[in-house]
Length: 141
Image 1 (cartoon, rainbow, N blue to C red):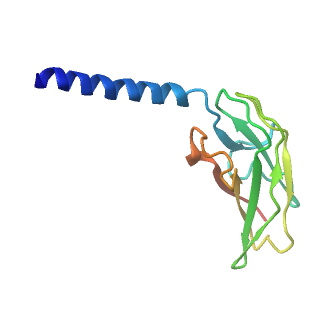
Image 2: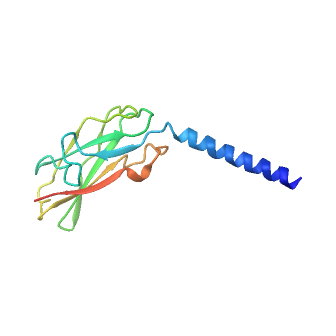
Image 3: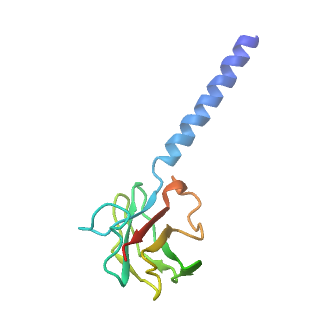
């Protein structure tokens, strides 16, 4: 009797685990990326000494609408955030157009440090991987 109960509990647990994995497989996964043609490193986001550029890639299979992107600059002991920009629709497996953010004056205290956050207000809480929504880098002064 105990063995059959154990089999039932184990079967039910495995069934729930499989359903959970299957339901998350089609989700979207939003990741900040360097613009096309830029070097794939922490300085690749720097278009020039006046602008940061970012593309949002959707590594999931589900389409998503208008994802906000926020850039925060850190310099001289302060932070400065630009207003978030929306991407428009991003297809599963696709990318947004390049979003550009102005670099604030005074940011280059040698280098200009920044953090890019995709979905900063967590409007998409069912995203497949929230851990890859932020990237940091710097523009060399």
